[in-house]
Image 1 (cartoon, rainbow, N blue to C red):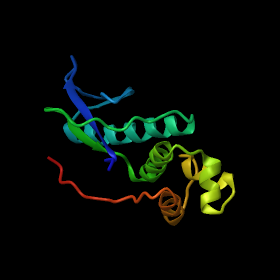
Image 2: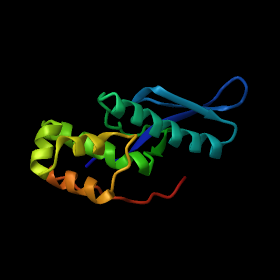
Image 3: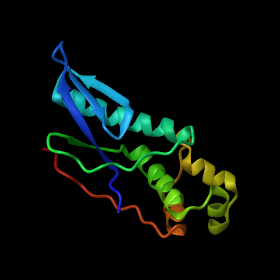
Amino acid sequence: MSTLAFPAVFERDESNRLVVHFPDLPQAHTDGATQEEAFEEAIDCLGSTIAFLLADREPVPRPSPAKPGQQIIPVPLWVSGKLALHWALASAGINQSALARRMGVRETVVRRLLDPRHNVRPERLQQALAALNVHLVMATLEAA
């Protein structure tokens, strides 16, 4: 089971802003004036970073366990299903064409499912994940 949330480090800089960076995604960093602003910016930054990686067909690492002092940042809903599909394809060791055959659709349908710039129906994402014997499960976690 993979969690669609990444650990992040929040640190004050010399101007007293909260700077956020993700140990698993070194290219992702942002900041905010307050804890709440930094947290919201971190969610946006995480989603954008994942979207860019998916659009460039780059691997997206799975999140490492959070270490003491790190905060968990959820992957935004708009990209979480696409990330789950990306990871499921990699785990299954098959390409987009093979998934399209399993689903009985054209390969362009699968490409769109993985494209963060393309809106897709949740039912289609569920169909693709089910074809890989994967189910996306949502959970809630109260903020600390």
